[in-house]
Image 1: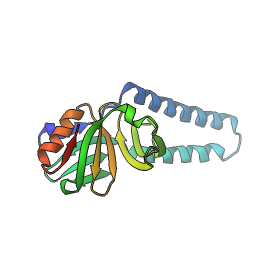
Image 2: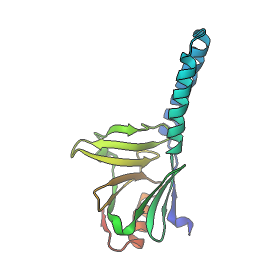
Image 3: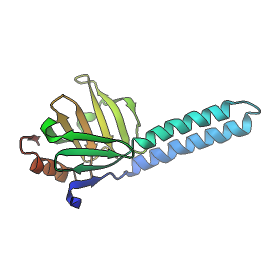
Image 4: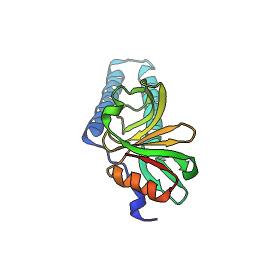
Length: 173
């Protein structure tokens, strides 16, 4: 497999700042509860819940997108979303303006990236998002009407790479 078939995620400055702020808030709240809560279980409960939520978020962080011989793979830390070419319907670049009214349903909101489920109220559909930033966005739709929104430093190369590998695919500009 060549390096041209692998597209890595890179966090932008805004996403790094959101991640650092969230981690800082959790640390400050844990320290505050530890020092100001005498003999209570509140610090332990908060720390346990915060650690569980952060741990689950870390497992879902997108790492890369790969174009293999038979599918597009969105690789996270522990999960791989495998989209076979025969299930692909369309792939196209989109701008941030098309996602103006995105509503997070179950999502990270910038903590180590943007991933999870978002609602697009324009047509009441749920989109699965795997993005490191809101720049270089590509939307992939399969025949089951499932949409995946991914980000890449090289979005045009990603779209063209999928088009070269999957000939039946409808490529929108």
